Length: 306
Image (tube, rainbow, N blue to C red; front, top):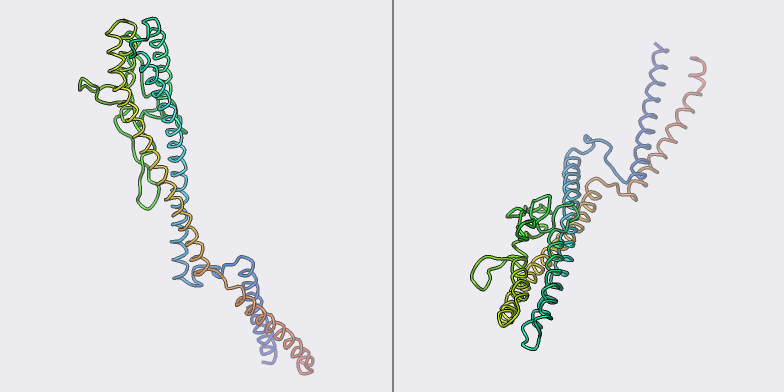
């Protein structure tokens, strides 16, 4: 009977001291990690909310990657459109020269040659690639946006008619670029659907013919080039507004991540001041329990029982 009481005393004391030590270690861990929950059962409601915050953070990370890709593609498009605008402006300058009665047919021939070069450069920009390796102005097409017919020299749009929008967060979507017709296509003076490539080619051909017809073609070409430039400037404005919206969404995403961080700290974070105070109290109780156990274990009665 006495042996059972002695064994029970040691077992109970060992269990109590072990429990106190485990609680002290848990508090120490909370101080080190800044988290007060070790397992979901510690606070099921808080644990559930933390899981929701983790999900929001993962979704935000995916949206951030999508936004970065969209932003890169739009920046590529913006740079290309700037160059396109400069080339069309140059075409207008030399078309203005060709429209002058003081310009000779020989000079118009040189202007026609330069227009051909500008057209080739424009086609190169139209077939430029974005960050994903797709044609900048080809829609969803993976190859070139425009194909030049070997027999006629005509530039033919071979991209897709539209471009899929990309999710950038909070249910917001944005198109990462423009299709070729949205940038280079327009209705010409005859009321027919055309593009800058066909009009430059026609102007070059007319200038090579010389005479009054060449002068008239150059004067008509000025209006065509103005229309083409307006179309490019409109496309650039659209791209700029999309870039601005991507930036706004990025700022909102940063704010949301800060909100998640603060809420995570509030829901599952350990209050360091309170936790350190509790740990000090726990250590004091643990030391007292250990000292009490040693004193009781060394009483004469227990010595005699042993």
